[in-house]
Amino acid sequence: MPLERFAMSMTLLERLSSGLSGSEMERILTEMEKALATGLSNPKTAALMGAYIHVIRERQNTVIHRDLLLNIAATWIIRADENPAVINPDVHQQKLTLFEELSKGAAHDFFYRLGIEPLMPLFNISPEEFQTLWEYNTVEIRKLNEALRQLSSHRKAEQKGQPTDSASK
Image 1 (cartoon, rainbow, N blue to C red):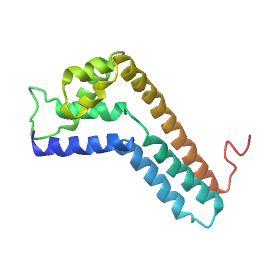
Image 2 (image 1 turned 180 degrees about the vertical axis):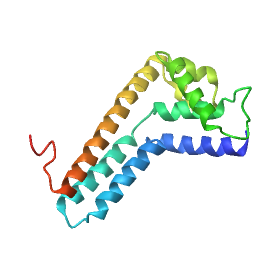
Image 3 (image 1 turned 90 degrees about the vertical axis):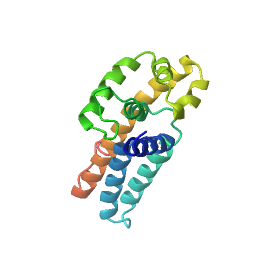
């Protein structure tokens, strides 16, 4: 496997163990930096930082992260028209779109057929358990995005001195 693909694969596998994709982690860290900029002497800011830390800790229990698994597949599987030494973002995105469609309803079988060695321990669980975890993770990703949106909204409202949605209810 060419070095660029190997490096990306290792990064994705490490992210898989953390339960957060790179973009999810970056969003959380960016919001934490913004909250820190307002100062921790404010108890509301400290609580906000605690909420972000809680989000990260909760995600570490993730067994299957659908976006990361799809990215691992898109990195390991090389198309005939693709230069193996280079990861072309457009080709990668095309593979992600295709793999997402192919994995619907039968994620276990899709990934098992690919035979990606580092993912093989995942197949010690039944296809039904894998599908349950896959669907659960899809919901958890949506919940994570909503939680980050709400925390960001709360931080922005605090900076402006306005009540948040939850505070006005």
